[in-house]
Figure 1 (cartoon, rainbow, N blue to C red):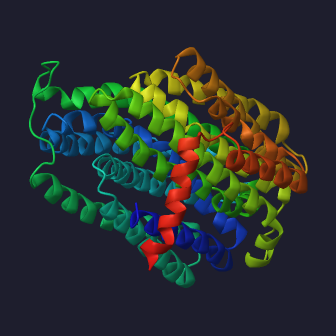
Figure 2 (cartoon, rainbow, N blue to C red; figure 1 turned 120 degrees about the horizontal axis):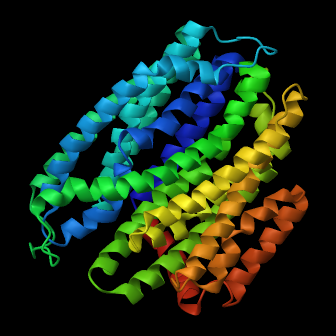
Length: 489
C-alpha cells in the first residue's frame, strides 16, 4: 500500500484535471455526447463479462490457497473474452433501438442526429467490451494483491487516455473523439496488463498446492465464476442503470447542452466512489484469505475496522468537495457552471454507493450475491421513481438537473438503509458504528455550514471516544501516523 496509495492518488488527480481541461476543449453539447457514451459503456461493461470482474475477486483466493491460481487464470481469460465478444456483437446489432431510446423528446428536438447517436452507441459498445475485460484484469490483480503492478497499470491507462483525449480533442473537439481516445487507451493497457499478469501467474506460487477440500473438479472454474458473476452482475447493472437514469432524463427532456453542464459535475464527484472501488477489493482480498483459511474472527475484525476508517476518510473528502463547490465554477470552461445543490446530490449518491461496500462484501463472503442485487435494486428503483417526479418534461432545466441529482442521492441512501438491514438480518457482527456511518451521507442534504459542522463533530467523537473506533483501531491509526514521517525520510 505504501506504493499503491500514492499511485492511486496520482491517478485520481489526473482524472480530475482531465475533466476540468475537457470543459475548455469541448462545448457543453459535445461534452453531453461524451456523457451519452459514458452512460452506454458504464451500463454494458459488467453485462458483457457476466459479472466476472466481481467473481474473480470472490474466488481467486479460493483457488490460490489451493495452489490452482494458474489454472483459474488460464481458464478464465479465454472463456470470459469469448463471452464478452459474443455479447458485444449482439449489443452492436441492437445499436439502432438503443440509439432511439437515448434520443430526446420531440419538444426538445434531435440535437444529436440519428446517425451520430448510433455512432455514439457503437463506440459505447466498443468501450464497454474493453472496459469489461479491463475490470476483470483489475479484479485478478487486486485479488492476487499485486498492488504495485495494479497501480502502475491504472495510472498508465489514465495518463494515456488524458493525453489522447486532450490531444485529439484539440484537433477535433467532439464527444466521439474522446470515446475513440478512451477505447485506444483501454486496448493498449489491457494488452500490457494481461501480459504482465500472465507472466506473474506462470511464476512460482506463494501457496502450496493443497487440493480442493470439496473435491470439486478442475473444470468447474468457469462454471463457478459464471454462476456467481451472473447474479453479482445484476447488482452492478442496477447501480449503473439507477445512477444513469438521471443522465437519461436530463438528456431526454433538456438535450445535450444541459447534459453537458451536468456531466462534468458528475465526473468531479465520481472519484469518491472510484476511491472506494480501489479500496474495497484490496480489503476484500485480505479478508477473503483469512475467511477461506478458517480465521473468520480475524476477517470480521479487519473488515469492520477497514470499513469505518474508509467511510470516515471518504465522507471527510465529500464534505470538503461540497464546501469547495463554488471554486469549481472558476476552473471550468465557458458555458459551464456549478450549482451547489447538484454537487450535494451527486456527492450523496457516490458516497452512499461507496458505503454499500460492507454489505456487498458480506454478501460475497456468505456467497449470497442475490442479497447485493436486492439492496442495490431497491435504491435504483427509488432513484427511477424520484427522477421521474423531480426531472419533469418541459420544466426549468436548472431545477430539473438539481432534482435529478437529489433523486440519485436519496435513492442510494435508501439502498444504504437496506444494506444495514441485511447486515443485521444476516447476523454478520457488524460494529454498531457501521450502521450509523452507512447512512451518514444524509448530512449532505443540510446547508453546507451545518453539514460541515455536523461531520466535524462525528470526527471528534471518532478520535476521542470508543463509540466509533475501538481502542485498538485508534491505536493502529496513531501508530500509522507516527510511522508515516519516518517512512518518507
